[in-house]
Length: 274
Image (cartoon, rainbow, N blue to C red; front, top):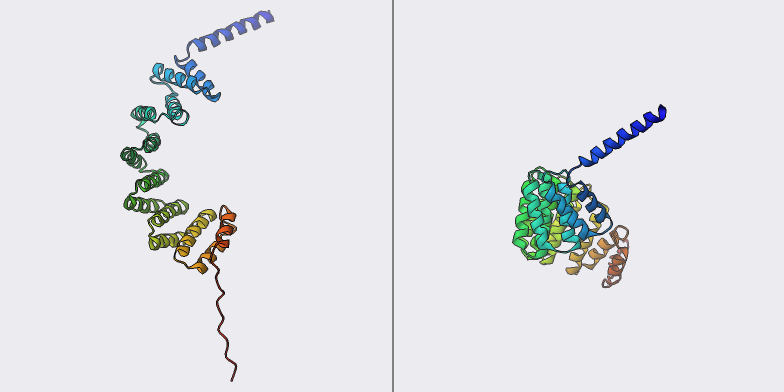
């Protein structure tokens, strides 16, 4: 009797399992196969699986995952940026009501357009990012920093400066503020505007809560400015102050060894007592 009951329970459980399997969503197998192929580096097979899932699961739970993986394969694996644009536009139309998701899609879109050399479209995408990031200081900071770097590659230093000033002003995080200011000082140095660069760096170094590495990078750039002005004593002083904090100390040692000889200051003779 006991054996009969166990067999009966086993039959019921098997029947329930079969019912569950038969009731799975149409794209269940596609998403599972796509994930498995992706984990094994079989990207073309994964791509087909994710595409099938999107076709058969118009309201599927894992649609965002499928879109993400397809755009990732297009960008990072195949380097097919034109396809990536199409995928991201479709993804934005479907999922763009969520501000964080919309920001992420547009941020990727800006990067893709920049890779294609379509800078106007890239800037347009980043401007949409700023709209979606209105309640996220972190995303606003990231977007403005990326826009400034793009403007710099375009040679539009007026927009670089305006964007980075906004970048520094839009965050209360001093580390993020320092990154914006460092980029601004670096941009001024690229166009040999040494005075502006020095002013920005000096303001950066007055901030509290800035990482040791960021300070070292700022001091290194400041040393460049003083060396360009042939103030070798100040250059030496600045470089020696970051010997242990600069990411690559050997660079500092090399710079110091290549500085022109700096004669020690003569101490005025004290006249003999009368």
